[in-house]
Amino acid sequence: MSGMIAKAKAIEVLQACRRHGVLLTTAESCTGGLIVASLTDIAGSSDVVDRGFVTYSNNAKHEMIGVPAELIAKHGAVSKEVALSMATGALEHSNAGIAISVTGIAGPGGGTAAKPVGLVWFGLAFGEKQTVATRRVFDDQGRASIRAAAVNTALDILLEALS
Image 1 (cartoon, rainbow, N blue to C red):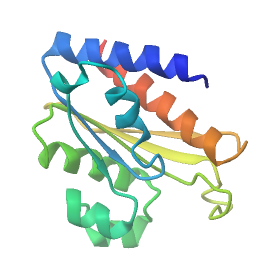
Image 2: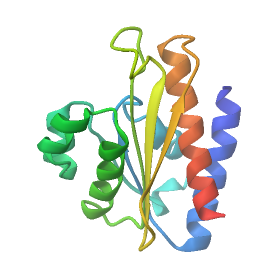
Image 3: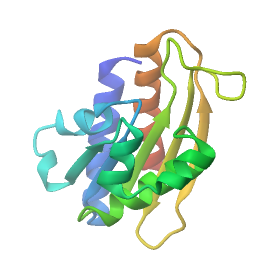
Image 4: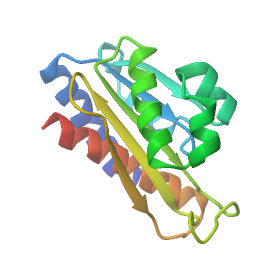
């Protein structure tokens, strides 16, 4: 993914949030803040971006946005359940009206047969709508590639929700 594609999508997300009158927050694990960085790279984004949570460790997911430790223990950090909880937790711990979460395995190690390198779960919480999760498995072409694909997908999910 080129930086220009991400930049164009980030601009679209900011404009869509403005049209809806909502602030945005992120809860990021494997992307380490790259989603919120793609948005805050755009001048004037402060009227839309409320905050970004980088919840890389399981403890951070629990302490910063209230993901229950039992949920992580039962399903693993890279799971539908945790992605959903991260999104709702980010909304609850911010002033935002829309939240995107991401948790995945960017590699090069850490993958299993059930959860391969490239597996990423996204959560989307938007106002009173039901929080939804999206599962993707990106080709393992290296850590940077997986993280870039996750940012691109997160922006797509936000655009779809705001369209």
